Image (tube, rainbow, N blue to C red):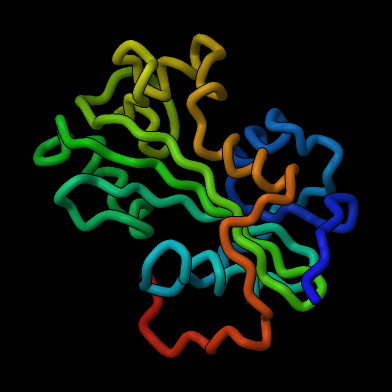
Length: 191
């Protein structure tokens, strides 16, 4: 039977120092954290990517994956390979987008996934930031980019990562699966 996770038993692992800093701000400062290696990622939908990353990371590890769903464009879980294209503008400018952060945890024989979302629009880059922060303008932010909001100390209020962490802290997964029931990934990997 599925039982609740205890944060004190978990370790957050990521290779991205910017994400580590945000996780600390979002209420996980007391959680053990380690800079981990990049895990191989399935070339699949975002849920499948984080599900298999959680399995690969092992028991008691929290993993994260970010996707960007862009209206009419094939981005999704491959966003990290397309950041420069997003920053260059082109066909992305003016398109609606949803920034989605998935957290995955393998604990007690179950994989739990937690999701956070932030809706907005993509535009020309404004501000200094990492990832797609200079081009993503969350709804309700008066047209400011995540990079501009970060400079003002206001990005957290619009953060999909913060929403995913809140779901984790509250133990409100969007998906739970017994680890033994997850089929091994046999498809291609992101390159």
